[in-house]
Length: 203
Image (tube, rainbow, N blue to C red):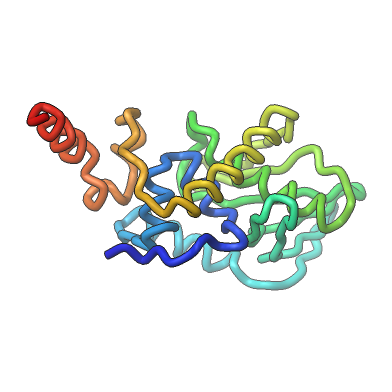
């Protein structure tokens, strides 16, 4: 069932991740409000239970604010930073992810979106952030280059464009992304493309 009603004022930061990974995934999760749970999704939620708690934590050389809500009126995006950490008077976001560092830009775009929101809220320039991958048990530093900032801004604009249209994008041709996607049983990318081919042949 199509749950789409009207274009939203703000796009959740997590949906920038979904769109950068696959526009069709964004369509299912945001426009159609569809979500499938498998062992990977549930594991990710369980790992976040200890993180998604508001509060402050003082470490030897830094201070952590957990579950910080941020937003950008310019880009019309909003969401939570897992952690906003301050070290040596420098503030930066830290995002926690279940898997390992990947070859796609989606995690980095989500983190950069958090930084852009923080910059707008604080007036500070944020040069870098970190993604902690549970499987690798380490942080990956992400430098917010001009290219990554522009890619994030473009992703936010595309999210608003797709939300305004309200239609489900076609499957991605990059099948490696489909293999690890929890929405594959709902999306059925191969079957959908075959059906479209049959319809074209009929014409």
